[in-house]
Image (tube, rainbow, N blue to C red; front, side, top):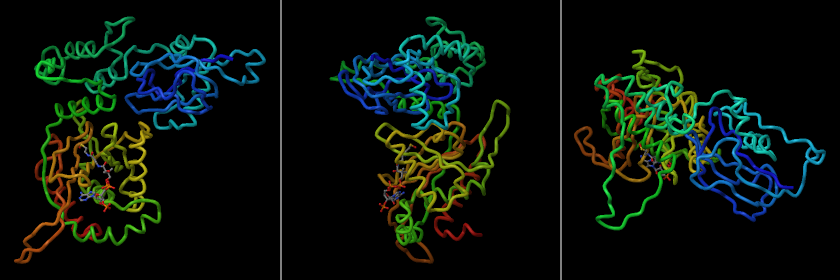
Length: 431
Ligand code: CAO
């Protein structure tokens, strides 16, 4: 019999997504649970599996389309019919209650949701609105843009079809709230037109991926709203590198890799406890500083799709082996696009280690709602003057970008010096 596959609910409060890729073709014989499309949202990229086996008769969506929960994705000729269908029961209308939380989207749950939305009729979109109540019509990118400006999307008047809200509507709303109070520079209202580059030679264009758009928006937002200062220092890691070489077998036996990043994580977690200002957020709206009694650290991971930052939770409570294992797992998940949105949320501080690649120093950008990020560059042997003589030591450059609204220069210098001291002699941690 012929069946439709509809887009299931992907995450809490997510009603649309972008079709990143179609993984099958018309005429393909597919298995139950086989991934058929990849959908990108502001939060993550999710594989959507087929709820049954069959032959694909038609594909109703194209790469790059913005698709809505409940929308028909494909028509499939399914060999078997369920007992309920044979008995003539109508398939259940999709239940779009917000039961799937962003932090708990497992493959099993996604499959369950897919099964819920398989239907032989196309009334699903109407069902969504009636079961959820009024949904403000706006794409994920517009919602994100509004959030970044601190604008409640529910207060924005949409000028598009059926009241759909665009970036321009959010900007117009924001401008009207500010009413020319001298803050226009905070609103990146109109991106300037770029010149026609083809007048100087051949060009090609490609649309930005969602990850690239989000990185672009988030870095612009940070650059415009956080006054950043960068402090540089160098850590003598000669002894800790010896320790790493001597002990890496132990971590390998447990299935992980004892890398410099894991060691830096451990030391940074201790530093965040010692210097609570660096484990805080600035809340200008309420003129307050939010100090956190948990130490969640993001680690920048370079992936083929772009930069992703999974969060190591409670890093201060984990030993080096645990941190190494968890970092390896999260980095692998990032590279295979399996990170959930929850695994990228709630970080207090970030580490960006480019030392495995190249470079003598760089100035990373503080993440929104954090107050500092530490850049790590490639360690190398240097002549260091100690005790009246030059000695060869392995030195690792560190750069700490921090939010000057909360952190003064002396704080930044002390924080980084402490990290260098502990990396130089790890037993300093016990003192
Ligand atoms: N100096 C010298 N060597 C270093 C180093 C440093 N600062 N950091 C790592 N290395 C070495 C490692 O020790 C490892 O050597 P061995 O194989 O001999 O053990 C090698 O480089 C490769 O390391 P790795 O990549 O396996 O592991 P890692 O923990 O060092 O890095 C991760 C993990 C996820 C941080 C890294 O893979 C990555 O993605 N880095 C890029 C981060 C990024 O893009 N930052 C920019 C973001 S914009 O601010």
